Amino acid sequence: MRAVLETTPGGPEVLTVTEVPAPELTPDGVRIRVRAAGINRADVMQRLGRYPVPPGASNIFGLEVSGTVLELGPEVSGDAGLAVGDDVVALLDSGGYAEEVVAPAAQVLPVPAGVDPVAAAGLPEVCATVFSNVFMTAAAREGETVLIHGGTGGIGTNAIQMCRALGLRVLTTVGSPEKAAAARDLGAETVNYREEDFVERVKELTDGRGADIVLDVVGAMYLERNVDALAVNGRVVVIGLQGGRKGELDLGKLMAKRGAVIGTTLRSRPAEEKAQIMAAVREHVWPHVEAGRIVPVINRTFPLEEAAAAHEYFDSGAHIGKVLLVP
Image 1 (cartoon, rainbow, N blue to C red):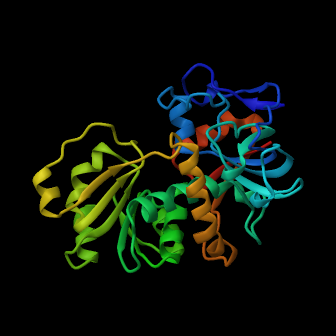
Image 2 (cartoon, rainbow, N blue to C red):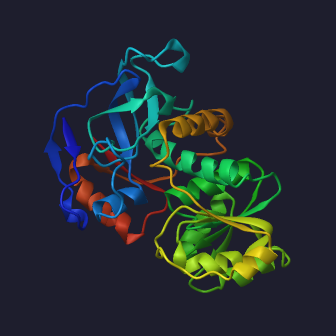
Image 3 (cartoon, one colour):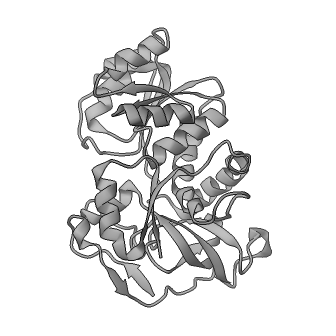
């Protein structure tokens, strides 16, 4: 089968399609013919040599796919609700940039009713990331205010919709009028970080109270300002390090607000935790997807052979929503 393997770290040009054997079916696995694979920031970090795959995982890129079930492992029970021929999505440790992938059955969900099977590839990683961090880790409650950094990326476009669907007020940072318009269309109140101080604007929008939750993909660059923007008893959840790994924090400010700063990743979690997250996504998020309150926002698709061009486009930051590879 064709796949994009990890080779020498570098720019998008290091990504090439190679012929490799199809993955072996594991006892608890589901073999999937890939319709599309989502591109994520983690893929870029892996490409640069900064985000190694978990022990034992494939060195093929890709953390999420949509596709069709080809084969079930002998330990996959009928309780999984999966059958050969089903249209599904899967959350992966790696392996998505390929024609076939094997995923643990507990990390495979049916494509939600009414969703295009290709576009569905833009759902599993972002839905799992947003729900696990905002609602499971930060324990968001209906009526709270969440500040989402990077509101028009794959995570951001999903987070805006999910948080709105589940009863939160959503503020988000964006970098251009075009992206502000896109975020507002999804239901967010926007702050242009190139023109406004997001801390001041958040306080203005919340009558000085601040945000109950900050979902942050930036990291060190925003650490202290995130705490400044936080409400009393607020939670900052850091899920990305685009703005660096090391920052300074006035612990007195954090203590005065009785706040918390939490750092998490999804990829390195144990399989049992990923299974719990995907089960929660199916229960709490899929109904909103099927009702049209959460939709996959797909910006562009590229053929698998153009993985380098897809990453170059992704790196440019021009996209609004997800970028997909289609074998």
